[in-house]
Image (tube, rainbow, N blue to C red; front, side, top):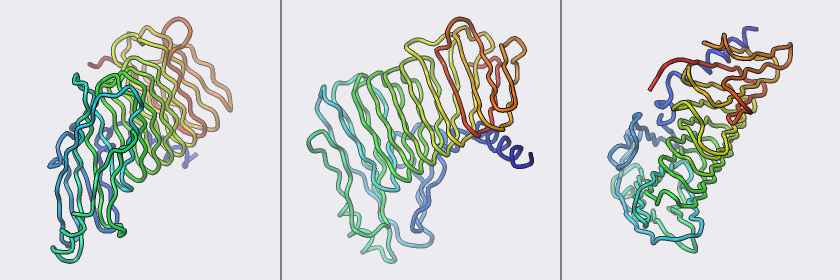
Length: 300
């Protein structure tokens, strides 16, 4: 029981501190990169430290032409990708690159080896064989773009998109905001945070928490399905939310629901569920072996 309480408190802390958690520091080989809770749209928003080693920083820009094909973006290992929808038809890419070494000259030499390239629909970043460098990509894409994003040990986020987006990330967080397209995400060993009110959205986290904030009063689109395996699940929604919402938990997990007096509840020793709104649920959230926190109240 004590372990269950600890997990529940961890879930509550995750909800309270995100988005700061989503932009928290990443540490690798003495290199630490952190941001605050604002959208990352420029390289100078990345706070970089290097444990008393020499740092070299620079940025590259690339413009990609309009395309109807899927653009694949692969983050540098230990780096990140931030994608924002815009009204232009081309893609604007900013590569924020950092290298470190024991002396300034070597750090600058390593920095020159970090290259961004786009070939056959694939945007990648390569660098020196040593691991003491990183790259963060800031991508502005047409709102209706088709994108495939992959990462390892770093953050991925998407905002204001309406196209098809597929995300795979390992050991790093994924955040999605204001995007109402066809979106699927498989996140391993990292958290997912969602804020929005529409689209066809499918989220799956393995060994990581999921935090969902529903905006408005109805869901616009096919639906939202979010599943967490071995991770906490949290939901925030307005108290006048009309679309059907179903939250389910399996296993011996704490289940906290604030403002659920009018909801339909079905609890037994192994399964718990709460349903809000009317009609067939279009928002379905579930967890296995993870605590659940639901807060229904007024918020913008």
